[in-house]
Image (cartoon, rainbow, N blue to C red):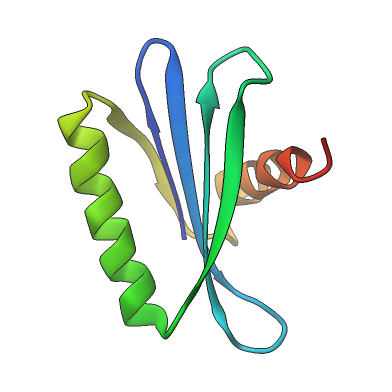
Length: 93
């Protein structure tokens, strides 16, 4: 699952997925739109439910900061694949 929030200047992107060992990973990328400023953090969740709880918390936090949800897709969709590609570029810089 991929969820993205944006304001006029900032973005936050969350990717929840399983790795090759079956562990649930909660990845969070953030930054300023149109710049290289930002960060990337990965957290290992105990299970899928914990990752979804973290997503619910993130939704509340971003709404309180005035960011609006602009994307919510599954990884297999065209939009999801494009978002995962963008997320992978952050880890190589």
